[in-house]
Length: 64
Picture: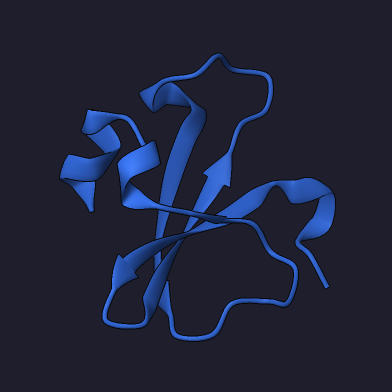
């Protein structure tokens, strides 16, 4: 089960933890495309998109 309309993605922060981010599809690539929710989870929903820290802009990496 994926997130509705792929509005949310999960970023692997290490140690088996993921943080939830909101992905704004209408915005171009960059830091303004991602909004951190601050939620840390161990298990993500089945089929939910996951992102690696390396694929994110530098501004978002600093916030993690």
